[in-house]
Image 1 (cartoon, rainbow, N blue to C red):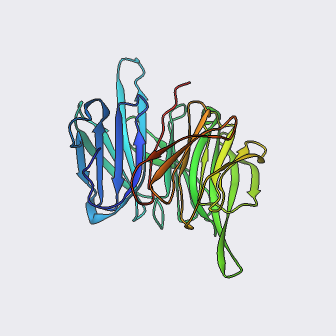
Image 2 (image 1 turned 45 degrees about the horizontal axis):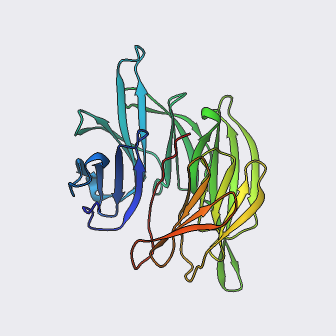
Length: 300
């Protein structure tokens, strides 16, 4: 058990090698944990975000030097005030603050890094921004997409950074209840920049995640479980059924090259499904309350 945060955790991200875990939350604190030393119930490194802004999103960014014998590891943090903070690994145990950039008019909902072209994508305030990032941690705006009325939920690079997908939520009033519809809106080609598709799913949604192989999308539908869609085009494949008692956002992630799906719950349990058959493999008892954030790492 990694116990250090004093308020809810909003984001956790594994490093590419699976050896470190970043966590951040409403206590305006970011922590890096050494997973090889889990017996020590203290983070390897931690820092308070200036101006007391909650941590909402994050991503790791690894740069390989031109001689391939040097590497630069960055921890990029998105905050509730629309700022992005960048830290660089100084040594095995410490990260040095590099810079902060004002990016969005609202909280930074999600961040993703493309190592093939050194691009960073951020979403917030209904807007997608793609940045160029250097090995020194400097950001410069590349493409700015005009803001939309919909709320962006997640962003991912696809096809080795050749395209990017933004998943939006939009609220609709129906029978005195709020129904959420997922917009896999704006699948873009990156270079040259062009919109490649606009897809609407007729489903309620509490969370959406692109699969490990980028061939499926998992959609927590707030009522019967998780809908699995083929990607692309967006065609329903199956439903991973589990009991949902409360209308809350439940996270879902794919793992092991999409062989399994790991789904949160509103009663503190974790459901693990076999995606090929749709059957429940096991249920892990975590805590007597709603699960917040979790992450997975898949080895191909």
